[in-house]
Length: 477
Image (cartoon, rainbow, N blue to C red; front, side):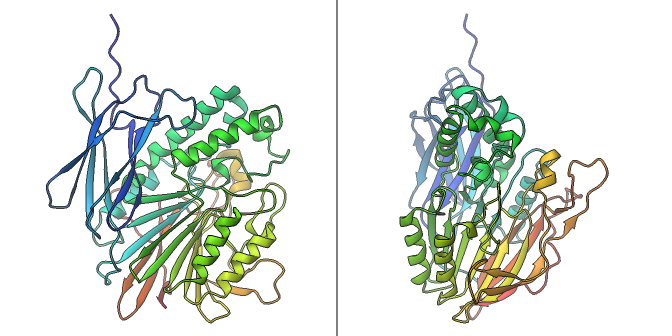
């Protein structure tokens, strides 16, 4: 007699809000756990706060998250005709070959407002990057969930994870993944661990996920011989197979895009510009993507937010650590457009393994506010010796090369440092794990407040406490 297929628990199923507008939402539904049956049909029900449930069917056409994977599944659904600026609740129910219809996942999200509200109803953008799951102990999820649930704190309307949501290339995995099946298994298991820990973030509010090098390999697309964890990449077809599978995972799991833009009425424009998907040996972006980004900056009619995967103020890097400034032509073009922008700009980024807020003015006298938010969870163990950093406390410049009159970013606030302790998992002093929120409200003009949130809170029963920052408030135009 055949055994019954296992009933997957809520913990195995992920309900991710990958995008929202003012009237629709896109959801990623699936499992990254190794399962033995296709999920089949089901239904998704949702409702606005205080309103009755609505239902749409979930069809049985599930897709593997990477090619030739036959034990993990996903699909995307879209919810339409939603109300602007409204909180919604969703529940996923799936049929099972033996069991009755089961609830397999839940989510909450807010549609974007038609315009930004007052101080008691701000539009909040959360920015974070660099999440190494081992050692996090669900601290990021716990802090974000508390922030989301507290009506007195800035609840994120949109989260942008600016790269390195997974570390595929850290540890023994790249050395032990033999052949195509081994590569697939390693990459999917990394995503499963990281996404399971981050699911309370990914299922609360829309999340744009950008890619950086660790979704592929360190310093992608370059590859040096100095990293022992990547030795296998130099032989046979290992590198091309790994790259193909990792890029599929970015597209199908993270819903990665070269560029995304969104307007909040006539108040604010947001652009997330991925500097890794189109990167080659001499360029940061595909030419069409760069032109689209430059047009967005030149045609701004309101203040804007640019989210990048690496800071524009980092000087060129060396072996195994190339920065945006290493790609001089496209880097200079992007910097020049920002320096000539006709409206105030917030430039947020990750990757740096430190956090700080700085400010400058461009050639037109417009405010440039820099927010660097990294890391959510630090790399630990032997790799931490080269990965851990602390923020510079001096002015930094953009462009970071070859410009006679660069703008000078003066530090406003710096994320504090955690000291290394004897026999601790971190081998150097490090920036405290954190994310940052950018809250916008209208009061005789558009106002911005930036707050930093440490994610390692010793008292898990209290609401999150922000860093005690001052002078991180601006009026934008």
